[in-house]
Length: 248
Image (cartoon, rainbow, N blue to C red; front, side, top):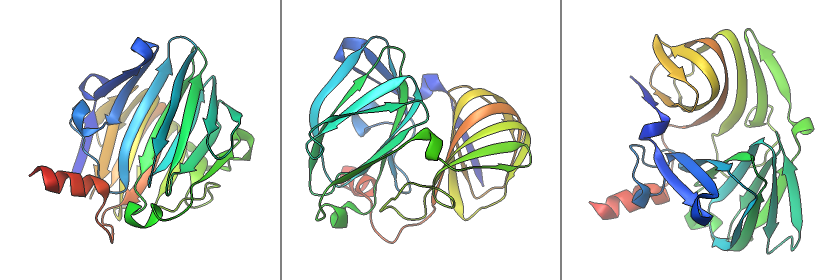
């Protein structure tokens, strides 16, 4: 039974272009430190904020599913398949299925904020597939209400995103009261976008990262939460597991 709460100061840190874009990372790359290593199909998770207009130049990816969720402002995306810039605004999302290789660039307008999250869908298989890209507009994201929480469904049950990774749920919650997480068959990863809540009596506030495993949880308070449910066990060795095995 486990509930971990990792505050922003304890998370990994990164920056681009001399600090024009800064990132706190609930799950960083191994060289970046931070207490949380890749787990389940989650390999990487960064919260990026642009201090000024800034462009991250063309760079390659393979194998992973790379998702961007625009939390504030405007970003633009370019890749070697589209060969054009695509604009995404608050509430929009995109996915790059990097497959056998794709290069992309990103521009963040001043004040923009986004999550970039990498999933490992079994890269030994996906690296043999052609790359693909989809984006999803905020107005197309289904919503529902369960008691005291309004839910925006990005992936999983009711979600609109197509993923090669299995057993994944991605949602944004607006909590105003009490909500129970009773499903112990998944790992629940929560980023506190705003607000102050308690989780089984423990305090969690803005920019905290929470991992709930093998435990039911009672959430109480007000806030916006970004929530990913993922498998406790996978049928393949992930890239993160392979890296950790080789480092022993």
